[in-house]
Image 1 (cartoon, one colour):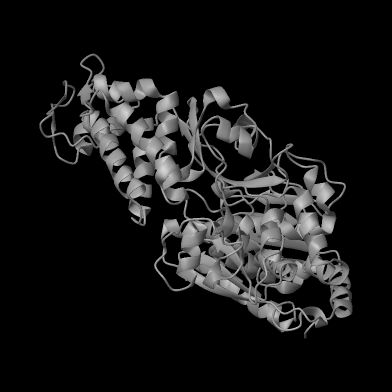
Image 2 (cartoon, rainbow, N blue to C red):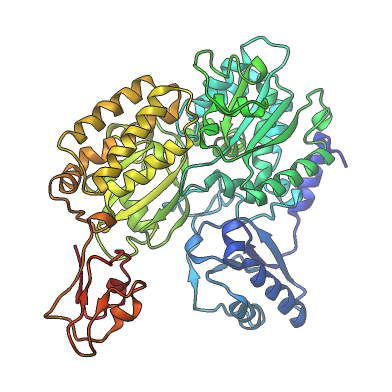
Length: 611
């Protein structure tokens, strides 16, 4: 049926009248499915049926954020209590049914704390995390529009259409202080105002879901777990600026998100929440998907627009900016997934509520994908202003290896390193910029003392060199030249003036590159040279890699005093370069050694030395 305002409200009220039942939620995002969530779901389904537990509801949801513990299963009891289980294989899923659901007594193994309070529970105690963009992920079934509607879904669009003028929507978004979550942090309300105030016979709304940073999967998780939040926000933006057509530009490598978006668009159209005369008004708005082919540069807004138009994804100079002259030369609003997912809550709870969260200049919350040498990797959403120390040690459990924290890379290949000296720096736009890093889209990679900063920087620069469109010389030539310098430094062939060359080229790239990819490509090596210059100099002057990562600078030897002749190293060596008899000293033939490190891993007596 196609809803009007009255029938939508009646339908929402009816959905909220739910009999108290036990609900079992299985995280079925990409990470959960890859870890075996389908097998867990099938086992739960069969076991619940076999036990005849008719008051138990089993449903698929998106990612809870506990990616280190996938597959995850949450049991919400009829009395309001909840238990989250992690690492749920088929055998443990069977136990959840036979021991927890059948008897009412939760298991004690594999139990994890929920990542955040439910924003819809006004009595919930404040936690380190606060879910706004992720508010529905792992709570609703993303393939059922009714579950989204029951949690105030499309109420923000209804409010905008019937209770607010476009100017009032712009003011509310502006007053909230929301800044674009795609990396640059441009005020969202100002962007919408520019497009709204630009006369044109056609305007467009575009969602940038071309999430390409290594280690980043925030947008993917939102689209897989709560696709309607983005559709609703894009419709609100369309009403506000006078657009009737939207496009979601999404990576083709996100098949599950694409499937759920297509289903959500279909459902919204059937309900009269997208398409012609939405909710019986004169406002019409439609959304189409456009699939990206994996080019990182298409995350830059002008390259993205070129790709939607069917052209090669290459940036063009700005101004004019897309808000004034964008898709097919028409005024275009471009925001990323997380920005849109936040909009409905701002309209429903008010700009003052959102403005009260975060810092003076960085309002609201930010979603981060925390990966690397971290104990509890996963997806978190935290208020702006939280410190890196709180994220690493309070939320994510500390360094996985138990070794010392060395650095965190924020902003992916466009960002910079945050060292231990800045662990207590607030995570907000200005504070990160002041120490040579940036917010970026939300990737956060944690490194420990075993990571080599030259090697890490080389990895990021290789990525940006490969992803450069090649249009402008500063990025095309400068990036390749800097990579070649880093490559020879990592191989012990560095020259005394290499660091100065990197700085000079980096400054030129920042000033002269056409788009953000080239302008920010130097950030990783500029920040690591600033904070880890002695590590670079060790590679250049001493021909040593202090972290033992750069293969060309490694030598494996066997300590005569510690070798017991167990033969473990010789048996593991793939090129048979280790000789020695049982219970006798073993020796590595350096001319044959490929420096794979297998001997180092195999030795139980700390006899194999790496240096």
